[in-house]
Image (cartoon, rainbow, N blue to C red; front, side, top):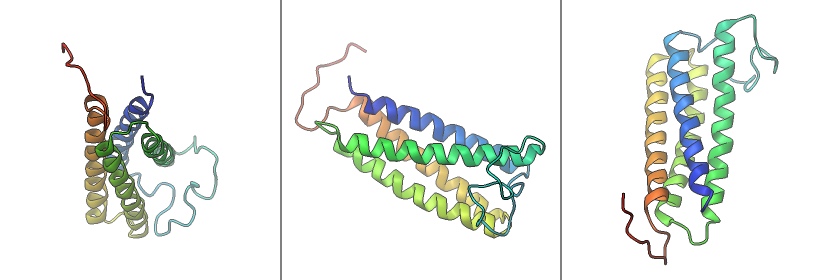
Length: 159
């Protein structure tokens, strides 16, 4: 059994949680609770790494930032582990690389959202890119669970 597909599955789940949490953050209008107009203090929240337990909005944004970092680390680990698979499911690897590129776009869009004082058009674009990123990642995960790696044969499954 190869652990890579389960790592990708965990990455998909955390990414989904990040998107849902980001929507909650936006719906509650807490996107600026850790400061707006500048992203220079990221990943800090209001100049501190401490968890802002006395400000609910800042706590919501802090959790979003933490999930963002976790998602990035898991995605990098997923890309590297699938790249190292022997044999590798090349189509899934290529899709994970595309997901990595979409993550870089997502980071840039997040910076634009914060620096535009939470402009609604940029926020919507940020959310749309997140959904595209998740969609590509899900397809890569499905391929890892269903497709035979290059050069191997797979017996028919009774399910």
